[in-house]
Each structure stands twice: as C-alpha cells, then as structure tokens.
Length: 88
Image (cartoon, rainbow, N blue to C red):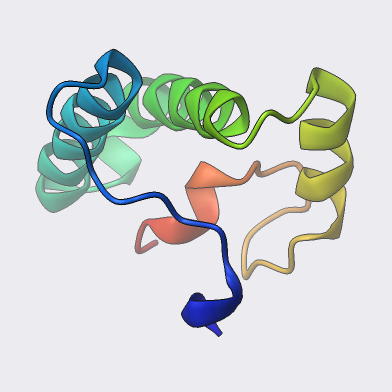
C-alpha cells in the first residue's frame, strides 16, 4: 500500500520536512505520556501535521477536509488525517 503513495524522501534542507519531523516528534512524546492526559495538545499538533502534509502534497483546504471525511478510524468521525496515525 505504501508503495502507491507519493511520499517524497525526507530532505533535511527542506523547511516543510523539518517542521513535519519536529511536530511528529512532539506528537510521539505526548502520545507516549498518555493520549487522554494530552488530548488538547495532541489535537493541535495533529491538525498542524495535517495542514503541513496537505501543503507537501499540494492539497487545498477543501481537499484535506474531503479526505478527512473518508478516513476510517476507530474513534469519532470528526478526527482528521494525522490523528489516525497515532495510537489511541
């Protein structure tokens, strides 16, 4: 499945890649401390990841919203792209 995605290689010189990596590290650290205790902060980080990933793939805000509507998750349907990547 992953082979079908247009995922660019990480470029340490690309500011967008740097921002995504930093946010991913922050989300990972918060999730390790417990999602419930850090729900608000994780939600903010995940939303930022969603917006940056959309920029990476040249998606409009509307396209991002449409994608989020169709992603199947174990939690409520209001979750966005980045949130389904983290463990509950």
